[in-house]
Amino acid sequence: MLKKVIYTTLIAVLFSACANPKVAENSTETKEDTNKAIPTLADFDKEAGKYVGKEVKISGLVTHICEHGGKSMHLTSDDGSEMSIKTKGDRFSNTLTGSKVTVYGTVSEFKMNEDYLKKWETQSMAEHQENGDDDAFNNASEQIKNYREQMKNSGKDYISFYSLEYKKHEEKK
Image 1 (spheres, rainbow, N blue to C red):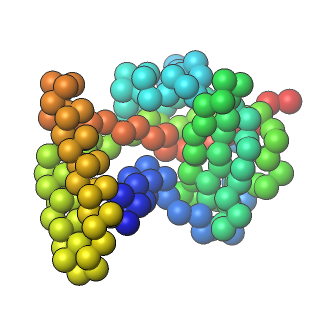
Image 2: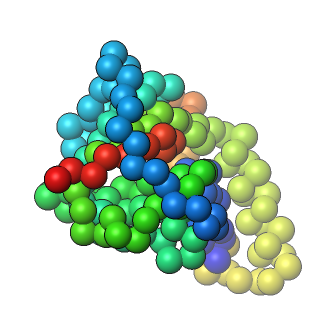
């Protein structure tokens, strides 16, 4: 259960929920010097750290538009890599499903650190005491342990999770 809660929390941090009825405009304006392409969806997590706070563009096939408001679009690349793109503004048009698009946005970074893990651990213990779900507690404890091990092995006191803050998209013809 807690594993689901943390994944949901991370997804919420990275991707907003679906819920706005307006349809996003298919904008064509670009900022010539600031748009840098990340070669593939598969490269996003490896390359995103270089572009935090900067506008980039990334391309893929739209495989899904969220049915609960159209605020999330799922992209897939030829190699099977996937990424969700969210909008805080207008909804994505359902007609984009099956289209190749280039998405422009700003790369953002969420840093999971020891303070975050301690809060998660405290929440996990409280939920365990409340509902007695041993599996959820053990899963959360194992995940927290794994994240701490990743931080130790990386030599950093945090783990980065990257997302793309949607600005606009262009449909490829």
